Amino acid sequence: MTEGGDPTKRDDPSDGEDPSDGEDPSNAGGGTETYGGTDAETPADGWIRELSRDDPLAAVSPLDGRYAGRTAPLSPYASEAALMRARVRVEVEYLIELGALDATPFDLEDAAVDALRDLYESFSAADARLIKRLETEGAAGYAATNHDVKAIEYFLRVRLTTLADSASGSSPVDDAEALFPWIHFGLTSEDVNNLAQRLLVKPAVTEVLVPAIREVRDALVELAHEHRETPMLARTHGQPATPTTFGKEMAVYAARL
Image 1 (tube, rainbow, N blue to C red):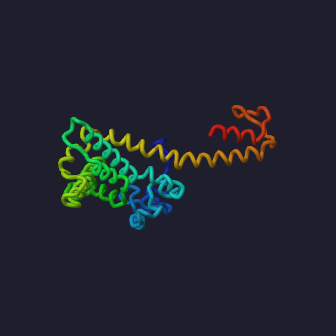
Image 2: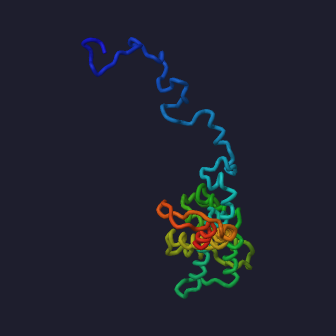
Image 3: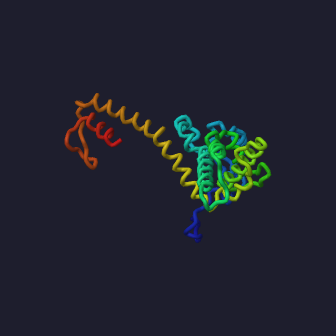
């Protein structure tokens, strides 16, 4: 501190000169340069955008990236395509039930019912892509819906029209446009979504999750038998407690599963 100076200030050893010699102090010492004052994308990051969406390195979640091999068995139940198919099933079955009511002005013959059910039983990747186009960019004469469930409704219109035009005089669906007002009639998106999710969750649990849990349980049972006489110190609240065996503790976990 200089004599008579501000006691809250210290002497500047550089005699007023900028120690960075005109450089940005935030970049002194060779730190990573930022663009526009923020951690913006650097020119070297462009290659990331060029990665194929099929490349696990481009995934935005470890579920579809690092652990894609582990989660692959869930794809038929948890993917967007699976949800599309389930939504189609809900909408089709609802339309069939409406046709069976005396209060509705249309009737569906057995052949028409079979043709409608075939829409979800034979649902394909091409169908899923059509639904996505109907939602995001428009297709088959329809503007983009920007709504995933509305795209299902338009998909059914497109497929019903195809059925009606497939064979003159012998189509299972005589008048496709007469059915249009009854697709999704009186429903909200949640009416469709909760049933569709239910159709997916149950088989995902029974076909994928339960078998995986059983494998873990069986491995624990093997450890329990192998170490049934291996002593170890039990603990309660992190403190030493009554002696037990490693096998017994593994059996506890197996029983919980």
